[in-house]
Each structure stands twice: as C-alpha cells, then as structure tokens.
Image (tube, rainbow, N blue to C red; front, side, top):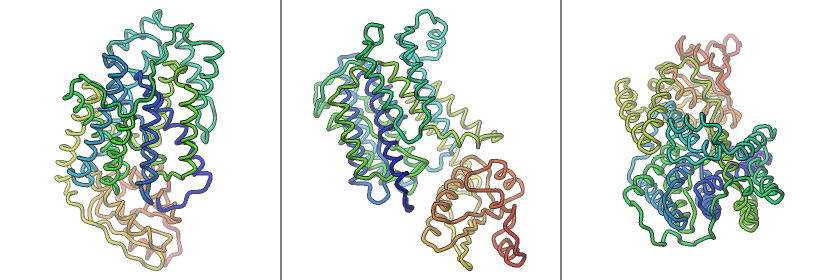
Length: 511
C-alpha cells in the first residue's frame, strides 16, 4: 500500500508469515501423507516470487487455507504408493499454475468482481465446513472411507471406537492455541516445537497415534512415472485455479491480472522444485510487503525444520488441529456482523454454502460461481448498474467532493470506490465528501467496500464523509457500526448543501 508501516507492524507481519503460512503448508503436507520438503519448497517459491516480482505493491503469495486444503482433499485418500502421491501433487500444482497463466491472459480484467460478497462468504463457509468434516475423523483417531455428513454422524455416535489418546492430544493442542494470549508470535510453530519435545519423552507410536509417511526431497518429482486419471487431474487443478482467481478478484481488484499471472508462475516454480499449491494470503484485506530480513528468518526456520525432521514426529491429530486453527484465524469474523437483519444477503450466503456442501467442493464451486455470475449480471442490468460510469472529483478549500454518477450496488461498488480512492489519494486534502445522492443500496458488499475505502483514507490522514444518503440507507449504515465511519460522517444532505450549511453555521457534519 502507499502508506508506510511502522516497525512493529513489520515485525507482526513477519510473525504472520512464520506463524500461519508455514504451519498451514506443513499441516496440509502431513495430513495428505506428503514429505515435508513439498511444504518447504512451496513456501520458498511463494516468498521468492513475492520479493523479486511483486514490485512496490506486493501481494503475499502463500499456501492459503482454502487452496492448500483443497489440494490436501484431492490427494489425502489417493490410492497408491507415496511416490505416486507425490507425483500427483506435483502435477496438480503444475496444472494449477498453467491454468492461472491462461486465466491471466484470456479472461478480461476484473472478470469475477461482480460476484456479491455474500456469495464469496458462502463459498468460504461451504469449503470450510466440508474440510472440517474431513479433519474430524483424523482428530478422533479413526479411519473414515467416506467424508459425508452421514459418516460424520455415525462417527460421533460411536464414541466407543474413538482413539482417546488421539482426542486428548488434539484437545491439548486446541487448548494451547486458543488460550495462549498473544498476537505477535507464531503460536502454531510453538505447538509444533512442544509436540516435538514431547515425542522424545513419550513416543506417540506407543499409544496408537499415526505419524504421516515421509520421504526425502525429490527434485522434479513430476517426472516420476505416473499412471493417473488425467482428465480428473485437469478438472481438479482447474477448480483450484478458479478458487485462486476468485480470491484475487475479491481482494486485489486493481491488480487481478498481474497477481493471477504471478500466482501461476509461483505454482509452476513450486511444481518444478517439488512444492505444493501456492495462492494468495492477506492481512487485514491489504497486500503485505515482505522485507529481506523476514525472508532470511523464514529461510533459517525452514532449514531448522528440515534438518531436525520435526515433521516425522508430529502426529496427525496435532496437524488437523493446526489446520482448523489457521482456517478460523483466516475467517474475517468482523464482516459477519454486517449480516444482521440483511435477509437477502443471508439467503445468498446460505444457498451458496448448501450447494458447496451438497455437491462437494469441486462441483459445488463451479455451480455456485456460474449461478452467481448469471444472477448478478441479470440483476445488475435490470438495475442499470452496467456499464459503470466513472466518478469525478472537485477540490474546494482543502476539501474533496466526489459525486458518484449512478446508484451504488454490489456490481459497481468495488469499481466506483476504488476509482474514488485513486482520485483523492494524491490530493492534499483532509476531508473527502462522497456524494451518493444517485442512490446507495444497503447490502453487505457495499458495507465492506465502504469500510475499506474509509480505512484506506484514514491511513492517509483523510476523513471520509458519505452524504446524499436516503433516510433508510442512512439509518442502516448507522446501525451497522461500520469501522472508520461514525454516525457523524453520514448525512442525508448532498455534498453541496452540506458544505454550505457547515460553512455558514459553523456546525459539525451530522447525520
């Protein structure tokens, strides 16, 4: 971003890399029975591409929870030798990179930006719940040939068949992660270190807790002989690439083509070096800048893990708990409060989640995105929100006025507000008045983008005032308690009358 980060924030971002990125990669590799070298190679390729190819505005390339766990879901129950499983993972990573490069070249920029935020939240919720169903049997220490909800219910009923040492170890790991009060240290890595130390005191193999099978690092593992279902591999990799592309469009709309191509390059490099799928990671919806010191610290930590072979002693229940913990950390819980009494948005979220659960991650993802694009496009055309007219800015006495030319809907909220931010980012003003007198639809997508715009202007020492609201829209925005948008910054007056009223009366701007 254009703002400068303090050393404390730099430090915390470095710990975010060490505490969330690496444990997620290690957990996915361990649960799928892949060697630790695949996780290390994937993280290193991602960080190298982020440092050398991202430029001034950096996107953090990491094995993010959803895409990495989707890779785990693809090969966790793969029937074959470990060497074949490694080759399958490498081919999936390679095909994913190729698909991302094709998407960056062929699809129009911001192709999937018109998908409403509730649909994206529903996709995330459906994937998370499906993966939790797969991880619960690992925590209970039982074998599950089917990850359906019926199988899950039968496992919960037959509590006599649980591996209670496995449950106790998973509960201990969960308690440490939840009760450890810290935000600037990698708790997951400390849990791994603690379990590694405990393994030398009390071998986990004696109490019946399995440890993943590991092999040595293999360069160019995708060249190994492989007899696989190639159409299935192409479909699975295309689905993972689609998920990563939607992530890029949702979080980095201004750099979607560049970020998609960069993620594709990182995946191809990861496949050639024996790594795993690389996606995009975020901190507070912002692209994270990576310093050279953070990269050096990550390299040293990876070397220690590889030399000490921690992963050969970490049991499966601990890996499953760490994967669940990272999923919960990545969920933006603050946005969920915006759904209060937003019945249409709740309906979209629930429908998307149910479709993912019923049809599975892969078929459900294609179905939800296809239906979402069709419905949102028809609705946007009916509401005359397409094509989008660009706003203009006027500067009056150190105050910027932006008049949006049309109604603010989910289909154009991102484009209009990003354009508004670009117009005033370089101006020497302290107050920005956003006139939405053409109309403002009160839905979660608009709430999210308004918060993002207000936060970015606040980081530039600017204050955002939203004016020209209808009575209903103003009351809804006030009751949502949006971040960086106090009730005093919302008004039903348009920008011109508001400035004249404020200048001649000397009263503050009020709703």
